[in-house]
Length: 242
View 1 (cartoon, rainbow, N blue to C red):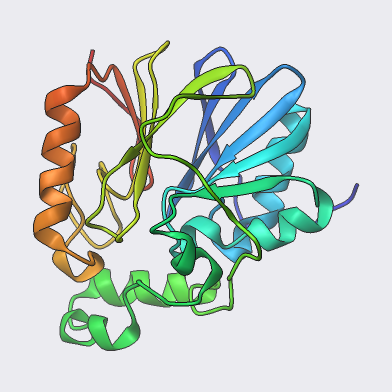
View 2 (view 1 turned 30 degrees about the vertical axis):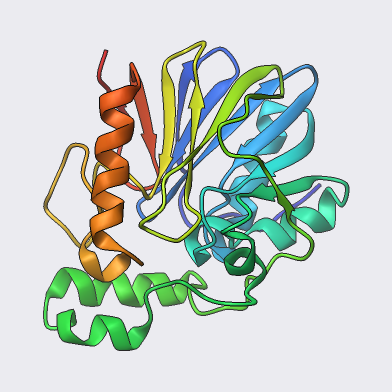
């Protein structure tokens, strides 16, 4: 199948057998493969559709599941396009996040929230790039399914535990892969962002969070309780802790 090429190719890092971390300059996603199937965790901006599809094609297999850390446009933007090709794929998020994924409600930073910070060149540049990537587009996903937090499931041959980590959004999830010590942390813990000079594990700036205090508490709880060897964030590079 021919697709329009993305502007740049993402960086793809093989973390462990069947686990690929895909990093772009704006946002990241993760692909799990095994048993002839693919599971995508987050899906970039609408403009990332061709790049997400290309990665899935290169890995090979049937896309059966899209797991969503949270319903922001840069994490669900390509899902509707993917469902046009894989209509039987299940989209799953926490029950508390489903209204944000469908866009029944919107928990996301808006232009008005950014106005006090637009004097900063990094914020202004990121805002322009995010809008160009489809950050203001209608990205609501029809019929997502709830996934039970804390209950271990198997996806594409991997043990996966959804972890409730509210704060960035009300129903934010991280995904823990205990066999490899891998934490897919979404935007609950990032290692970098175009608007910030901060590196290493941290919470995004308060303007991005629904409940900033809860976001910090969720990060602390996860890092205190789990033997994380590798962190795969929604923004910034992967980080090896073990």
